[in-house]
Structure formats: structure tokens, C-alpha cells
Length: 380
Ligand SMILES: O=C(O)C(=O)C[C@]1(C(=O)O)C=C[C@@H](O)C=C1
Image (cartoon, rainbow, N blue to C red; front, top):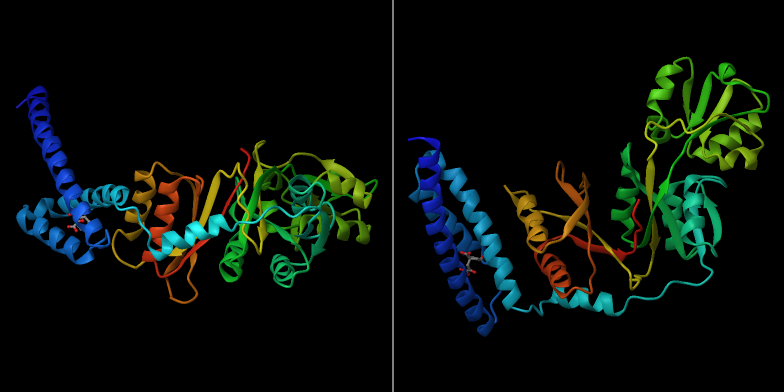
């Protein structure tokens, strides 16, 4: 058989399969109508197992896994269709609707907490996000969460992800512990400078004070300057402060340009990060949910049952809903060894009923599910 003949055969089979697909989906619609009338839920795990067992038994063993995968997808599509018929009033859907209805408004002249000292990247992000805010500084990221918990601030600004160095794992773990809402996000362009004490030159430098994630973003520069050793500190602006205090010509800080003026340092090298588009996403967290009218991003946290395909099936539901995932992060679940907590960001708004319903269904089905917010994030 040549290629054209084989393809003609496929075309003929596809024609029959499309017709069978349509018939199956029509049968699913009948199931959905029945379920609606009798107050039944869409997902029936026992029925799905029975369908998959039958498929596995009916197909040749070499194709069993392929067939099961196809029927799993078919049943995901079936459930999407059923959900469009059965407008859900389940507790989860109601909870999501209540959250959206009770979301508050932004606080005027807010008290905003950031980690570090003046000139830190979080400080620059905070000034962009809350130009009229009263900004205070905390020592550690965890302290920003405690400040919010204790009512010492209205918002906390935290880095979650850098475009080249990746996620800030500690902040993700703190998000799981405290479960505050994300009410804003801002992608801050990050341009690192090497600052030394007055009169120092790049040749004098033997130690660079900075945070490891900033050092990683400048790996190429430090490969070319191998004699410069990294001294890790808690924050880039704290690094600048320490270098200024030391007054030692062999020590430099890797931090923002703003720190030069703030701490009386000289710029020895500018924009030394690997990529010109280097950018860190900052979030603003709050005890109270706010959903602005231009909200374009949703963040979730959940765990999944440790069974084959559970992540694939969950993500497929977002794809079927036409929702574009922008970030997925997994972190160890401290309650279960080698199981994970997933963090998902996607573009969307709770004002879309189908999105609110999808999240409500997940709320009903998953043992751990937290809606982290629906907020505005400008393009990077
Ligand atoms: O039989 C049902 O209850 C259906 O809703 C149909 C179907 C399927 O596509 O076969 C879809 C979802 C259920 O979880 C189980 C099976």
C-alpha cells in the first residue's frame, strides 16, 4: 500500500469516527439531561472505570494504552459538555460566586510591607504598584507574611518568579502556609549593577555581596571575573548597605542602580545580567480578596490524587475551557512525602461564568483547593 492509499484509508476511518463521535456526544447530552432532572453529579468515577476496563478488554493488547488514553480524553470532553448543560449550584461553585460577590476595593494610601531596605527590587516594585503607599521594610520574606497577619500592613510585596532564574520557592511555600490573596502582580525589569565604594575599580573587587538568585542572573559576568567570590546576604539593597558600611575597596554589591545614590556607592559595571529582558514578577498579597474590573489573571493552589493522569486530566479541563495557562509550579507537600502542591496561573476572570464554574467544580472535587486571587498583571 502506498502513502496515498494509506491516507485515503485514514480519511475514510476518520469520517466514520467523526460520525460516531457526534453520536457519542449526543448520547452524553441525554445523560446530562437525565442527570440534571435527577439532581445527579457529572463525574461518575465507577462508570468511568467500567468504560475504561471494557475498552482495554476489547482492543489488542499492543494498542490498549493508546485506546485507554483516547477514551479518557473522550470522557473529559463529555464532562465538559455535560457541565455546559448542568449549571452547577454545588457548594464549590456557590463558594466561588460568594468570593467574587464579596470582594473588596483597594485600600487608599495603604501601608505596604516589603523585604529588605530602601533600593531593594521589591521596594521599586512596591513604588510602581502603590505610588501613594506608605512603605515599610521587613527582614525576611516570612516577616512580610507575619506583618500582614498581624495587621501591621495592608499589602505585602513579594517576588515569585524571575524570567531567567525561575521561581522563588520559599515564597511559594509561604503562600501555602498563609493562604493570603494575590491582589496585584507587576513584572519589574531587573537590571543589575555592580556597586563599589568611592574610588574602587572593577579590578579591585574580590567579593560580591548579593542574593544567590541575583548572582545566578549574572552568571556569565562572574564567569569572566572568576576572582570575585559571592557573599550571600538576605537582599540586594542590604548588600549595598553592608558594602557602604565596610568601606572596603575589594567588596562590591550586586543590586539596583538606585542603591548607588542611596548608599553613596560608585557604579563599577552596569546591566550585567545575562538577558536584556531580565524581569522579576512581584505580587501584592492581602488578607482580603480584591478583584479589579480589569482583572486578567487567576492563581490557584491545589493537590491532586496520586493516580496516573490526574494532572493531565485537570489541565485538560483548562484547555477545554479555552483558558491559557501562564505558569505551573509544584512544591513538596509537607503533609505527604513525595507528593506535591500545584500552583497554577492562567489568564481569565471570575466574571466569566464558565471559569467560575470550572473553579467551583475543582473546589468540590479536590481535597486541597485554594483560590488565590483574580488580579491585574500588566504585560512584561
Ligand atoms: O455515563 C455517564 O454518567 C456519563 O456522564 C458519560 C461519561 C462518558 O463519557 O462515558 C462521562 C462522564 C462520567 O464521569 C462517566 C461517563
